[in-house]
Length: 338
Image (tube, rainbow, N blue to C red):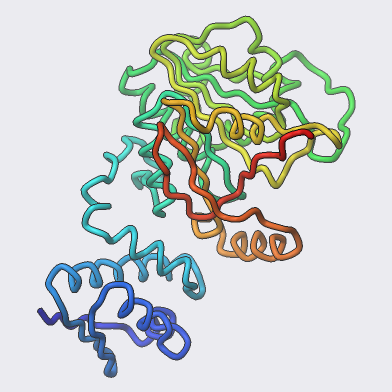
């Protein structure tokens, strides 16, 4: 089978890579023959491989709109997203939009994350800033709320300051916790009109609460999101996880590289990964630099900072007894005490 694809001159360098490095990767991985001439790229080989290559080029073009150039992680992600078996497993589109555009996973890692949230009642997601951990969890929660799959959306965050002591905050409890919960509210405001949010909050269908106020509760028929979970202690994490009631889902998100706890305290997110990795029904998803979909500079910033610190080696993430594909492992369990 032979297919010829038109390549714009403006995209040629970004798609082909320096010294056609990206084309060489496609040849080796997909087993196709590629011949580039002027504005045409001729692809030949087995029909399935050629179709996979054409779909991969489509994904690469999409990535090129978000990044100045494509690295090998981008190419690997494009190949995974374009795989026929991946398309067959795509989760249904969430019935949630932002500025008229449907929200959907944009990387392979995000797709694993959404699949895990759809399939499991307890999901942990760790990764650097900009990977959509909180945004996709809020999108799923809004979707479930609108479809009456749950009666309540509970947004939770530990009230831990990021290296600054703000002192006493005036106002009632809502005013005091509002600064800590603002990122969750921002995501919510992107997906729902302000009046609807206010109405849902008045009817107790949406609740924003600091982690400390979770003790003693049982959350039935709810979807509960714990954000910035790296700033929980193991005791707080245990307290939170045991609030899970009948007909409910929990999603726990955080970035283990941005812990704001006092020196010497173990992060509840890291501790939960060590203790719960083999528990059936619990999914652990790790997102990496290739899953960052915020401003293109965020990926470069994360990469620059990671060069200054030791990054744990890659390892499979256990989910209901099987390995989840992890794009860039981030959580490493602490060593057992001597």
